[in-house]
Picture (cartoon, helix red, strand yellow):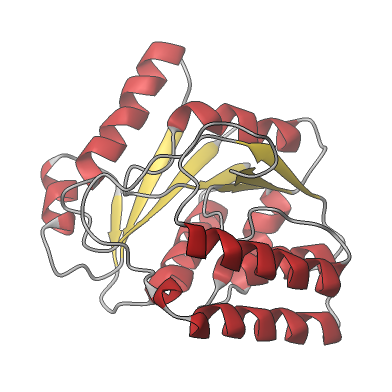
Length: 239
């Protein structure tokens, strides 16, 4: 199967080469064949230069689209290049390439269309973010269940794998704001199969996250309102 790791990157000059090299080293060690595409979201630092200088496959966006637009660009690339599975993979060192095999397995086995790498479905020792963020995730999880009737524990995880059908769906429509919880809710409303699997995550190795809205309650309230909007809408799968 053709498997693509989509790596959105904004000002990741300190991390992107290490992240890419870990994937390449893993491929060599385990005889896997994970392809990579970096979506450089109009970074202001040397992210693009580092990618080009080190022959890292990269798409340079000419405008900053935010995480939603960057990831959707990756899905468009995956669709146009006929990939069977696409995996969202952070460029900041938080995601561990060893767990890619685990999150793609339910898709290969036809058990799920979307698989979420979760820090909370099992009691594993891993970086689980700050206390405030964990509280926010639990609240969003409650709204997710209200909107979709399914419990999702790690609602904001960006470590996700999706099937070929969802690649096409996401290439056509993907939210620019709050993409992880909103797309998960939309996918469930469309009757796709969603599964969480336990993964370990690391703290960001360097730099500053582009998603810093957790610093106030505004983010959480907007996500919950977005989930309520998903609840009242009607959805159908893309044809």
